[in-house]
Image (cartoon, rainbow, N blue to C red; front, side, top):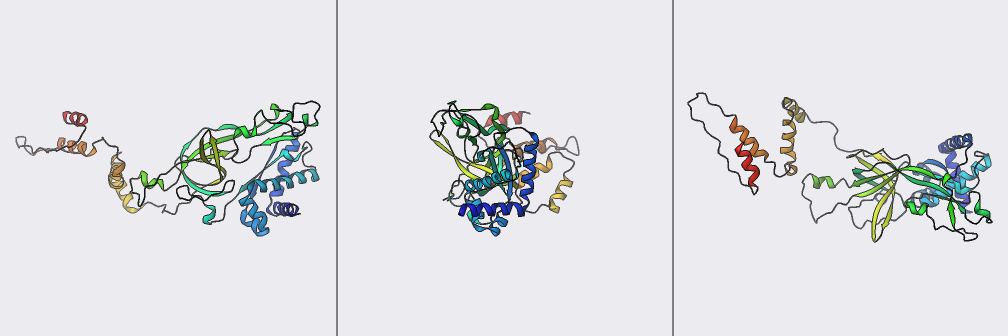
Length: 364
């Protein structure tokens, strides 16, 4: 009875939020195509605040148990399709794949995941808000969204139809969706995949790192104990690839998952939605920097050199000898009022362990 009550609330939310009209429109596109699909995908936008106000139990389920919440909405969508005859080709509930897209998470520390803090205290298969800086992006590849399997025993009733449909779930690898060791629940015969019904989707991997690591890259000293900043991988699927740019900061709503590779375990994030971070820093440039830019506009490199010397002397690559080069240039441009006037040469004392580069500079 509790499950029935939650389904009724889910249907009421779909109707009140306008998602039911979008769902019916998506069903019409599938029905007009007259093509039989193994999996029918539906994306439903969910506002956790509005859903919690409507029913606290269902709102809590969506945030803390997304797998169960997806099954509830899947059941509601399947019953709606059959009741209203929206898709004539649909046969089983397993063919309906519902993905809930969250608009936000409650602004509370319990829903924020910071991989630089210990203990992390996260729970698997639950939504978290993670902020990070993009450091690496892969090309877009394909993954298996869904597949249809049939029983290899021709006398089995499950050798036809859409009884065995496997779809991708958050945190699952490719082998969890498609492999050759599945067996029939009725006769225990091996299952074989019907390749013409395989559904593919886009996938992209993003490497992100905590924004606090920027302080170390700038050369700032780390207070307290030593910290180690480890990047983490974010999986972008379906409509999310190519939505993130290198070097930008994003807030990712996703599910932390463990990816096992032999004896190694890697923590990754299955992204549900992404949003650019709104920085609190001032967006305008100060008047002093504008004056400095206008004063050094005649040189293509002087403005950058001044900023690097003032704000980031720690990141100047070692071995460039910038100060020595400037001193040599200064000695070369010395002039005298009279030709016979004795030139006051600029004496330089260079202390270095690499004498090869210094010798070459002084010879020139």
